[in-house]
Image 1 (cartoon, rainbow, N blue to C red):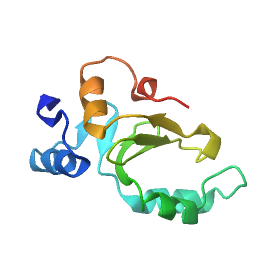
Image 2: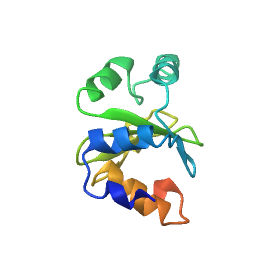
Image 3: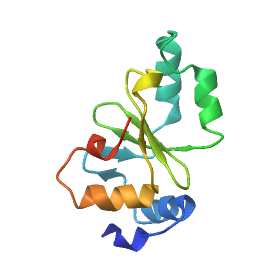
Image 4: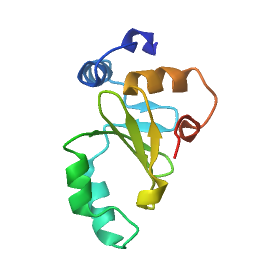
Length: 120
């Protein structure tokens, strides 16, 4: 189903998912509200966690695209996807060094958890 997304830009990938009304893929909920994440970041201040200001700076380079059932968030740029853990600890941010469309295609063809595609 998702092969049509092969080599698509992030904008085109998101547009296609919205047009097709794809809101979930396995353990992923697509297009989550930023409100919950902002409130969660503000409620967990620590020297180890991402601050709301750092998150806003991330949004200059990434777009919030999904949330896992475990509460982790996926942000994507044109060539990279990052996973912010529900703990918001900076050191635990994981990276997928390819496009969001590539990640969706690989994940759709796998029985693995989405986390298995990311590296620290």
